Length: 420
Image (cartoon, rainbow, N blue to C red; front, side, top):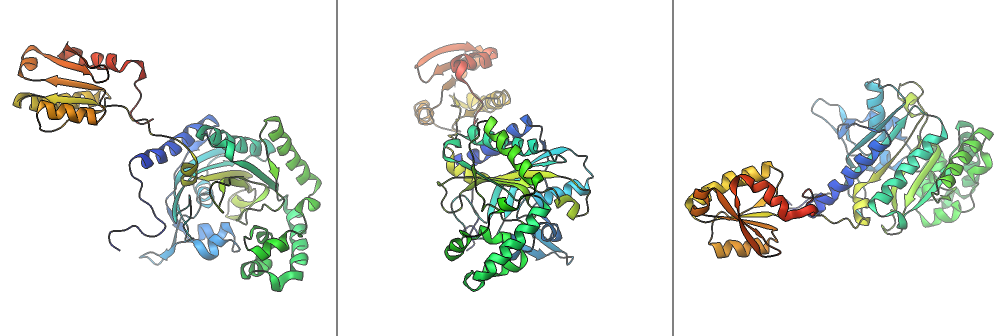
């Protein structure tokens, strides 16, 4: 066991690491266009941060959290999701609202590893606090759509949206669901029987086959909307239509956490198997006040980096190298100085520490170098170098003090930063 990863964790190597960073960096750049500020929370919190916010009917609380006592006897939990931690930050730091916060990093859930989701997974996370207007919901959904387009995966992902309404709506709908599901109580799965007592809305999220058959006949929440709830939802749908963002109203969509109200949404795909949500989130107007903060309407969503990586066709665009080919002892020593100078000027440099001219030229070709710099005693004494365009096979002598300009001329206008 000592030489293998823990089940549900994964190493990121080489190109995969760059794809991972590409998703993070792109999300960060897009978030700034919408006025989001970057924050980072610890990967573990006091357990109460999550148990008091996620709801005791959620699978996260009941089955999936990594919880342990530290050496001081305090109950600590590895972060299973971002919103609770960001709300804790908002309240503790007394941040002024309205405010938009972007965060990214690992999260941890003990569940069956599957395509695009490990037990240690990573998310990009967006939270907007302090705005009750439905325009905030539209903007967050637009941001999610913008990201999908930027990643080139918007064609195979669809938006499903629902509204849970306000407190009055949820209260009446809860009673209706209890009345309905009690008629099938003995046929429900064990999880759904427990949810019937704690939060019957969560039954609608069941993946059990028998539960799904029963759910198909359940009352619809749209029959219980207050006038205010219906108006709020209609404004969001109208905004999406104006922005030409296609959507499907899924009246069984409730999301997996107890703190949601009004808008809930998921961008889903068939390309990731049974767990097809790429981005998901919703509104949680009462969450901040439930943990001791002032009433703060809020909406947010998160996306799995690994899931985006599974879908995107992003390829690492590695810059071709400058290869140094020193000839002789003094040239070998000078190669260290020259390599350092070129790298400090933003150039990707490789060279073999030993070998003949023929061997080194062969290695330069194998590495697909764009430029070769060849120098020996004669070049050192005359303060020159030979520069070779490896594509054209053209070689010329240049002044040592003109080296940076000469290299850029060989690269032409196509030179990019090394990996993006």
